[in-house]
Image 1 (cartoon, one colour):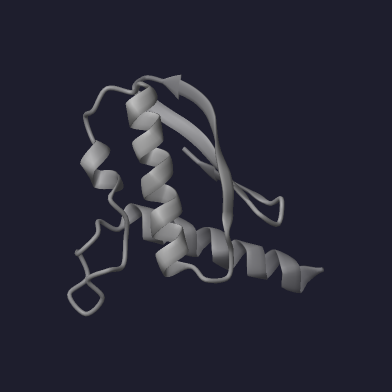
Image 2: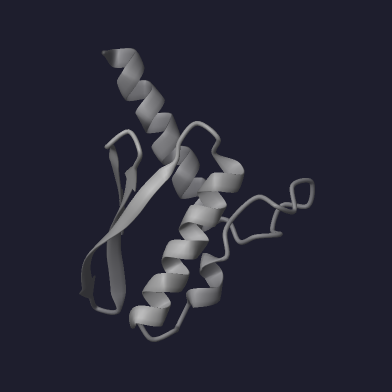
Length: 97
């Protein structure tokens, strides 16, 4: 069971690194990262959530072949910070705050 937890932890860390790295920021890996930085200081509405979903799924699909995203679950919007969970096809949830 410990091996499974380590595996999921490494996937979670990998996904968070991918999402926090602006696309093009790594010189030797220009396609690594996400477009989430484009959403900074934008109004959180339905269009924002659609773009967020697209950017998250796109980045994980390109950079983390061990998993597939099933959907994003939007949790809350507090102090201009959107919290959401990434549900993987395996049923695992990754919290993103």
